[in-house]
Image 1 (cartoon, rainbow, N blue to C red):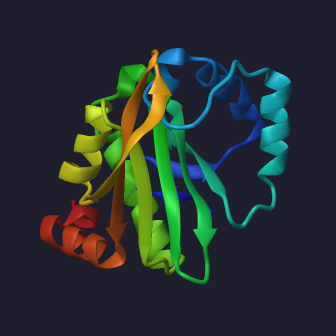
Image 2: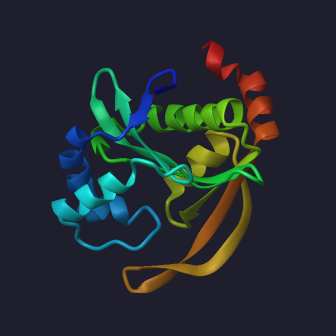
Length: 186
């Protein structure tokens, strides 16, 4: 099953995608903008990670694909809490040439529709490094997420500490937003 947006398809990550994912996994410009701990990554370690994806109901990872550009990035729903109906969401676009064309926005809307309309989740959580203004603007101004807090000095990048901005969106927020801007009927 694929998850469809207006401009993107979110699908399972396939072995044929690994070469591209490996290049992105070793691009410091990409990883400077996202959370987590990053080391240079071998293709073999990426393949081990890929093989672990097969049957993990608590962590779903997707390739973001477009008709014109092929695979352009990755999105996820991880730490899925089926009892409390929530999950953590993250995204990155590895193909820097296509940024600014609403592919990320469409990917986030597709994830929200899948999470809220198909999986029955009630909320999604996310976080960003304070200097990632593009992501903050995207999630807050274009996708209806709310800033819910700040973890001071959370990330360590380029010899200093940066705040983690904690964001979230509820099922109710999502349905209000798509009703207001008629996103799926555009």
